[in-house]
Image: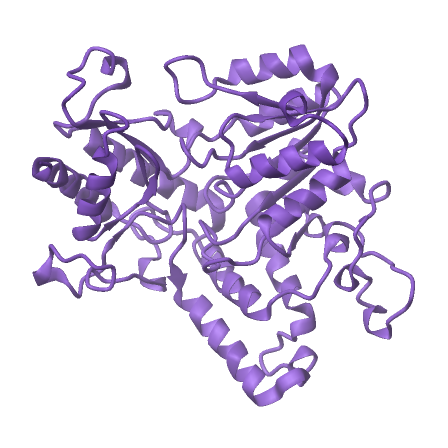
Length: 441
């Protein structure tokens, strides 16, 4: 099934009402769905997720431990994670044995860095974007320290050119070409959490491999957002969370990918019984026999309720035709929101920022304009910076039922999500943004 562009699966999701999110400026529309543009931070609950979680709760209540193997819906808990694997493989462009849902994003990142980051005196640097998500920055620094290295020297961070907000492809590739002999691991975000830039993943991976570097990706803001082809691109490893565009729920279970070319030479260092061959797992043998592929990195049995919630959303993705159909819809929605924001009297073009009245409140968009360089998210920078304009606008938007995401000190992120957002959401966001500016005092 391919989802028609004008028909997102909005009815498959539970949308909070204006009243439920505290939108006190819309008394006559309190029972109407709010304008939810925050799926880049936490995706909405699919009805299928709610149904599956409730079913598992019922099985727990009526079967207890028996539910591991004897399950009324043929989803025995001992193999429930395997039900999610085909969907995840399709979404990230991988083979099934190359992916697994497990643990949390940062834990998985540490597992992968420990497996792939093997610094030598000549090749020891970790190349990433400056202002990567803080958890990634902490992980990179701590991994360098574990090897006795100074993070200030080992972690090479790339910043945009002066006056720009996104990294240029040519600048990234130039650094890899120039310093590749000293770079052990190249690891960027698929989509940058702050600016919304979608990095040229295929070309970065290709250049990294040409220079003998390991290439990995943090896909927290990319998975379920943009099309991916990890296996075809020859990506070595990737990690992601699932509670953003994959709608698995707050703190949902994470995911991990390892290219199959590493199956023979790379074995899990931190073994756990859930990564053991399932044919003998419950025989409790003393020697660890890892599952071939990504599954061998599993350690503990995963949360059944978390997997059920993820599985419900993944089944909704499948109903929508997966990423090809959804990407088309995403581009239409994000372009529509951008056009409306361009029409605002408070919008300031990046090229005009240096000449505008610096005391006049306004906003610009720091996310790349070209759809090939971004996903669903638009990041709005509020001006003058450092004056609290963003916080005031953010609170006013919420009072009108527009739910975005703030990033201190000056950015609001808005993401029309292809599965459940529509044009009316984009129009409401633009309308109430103008009203909020007019109400500033």
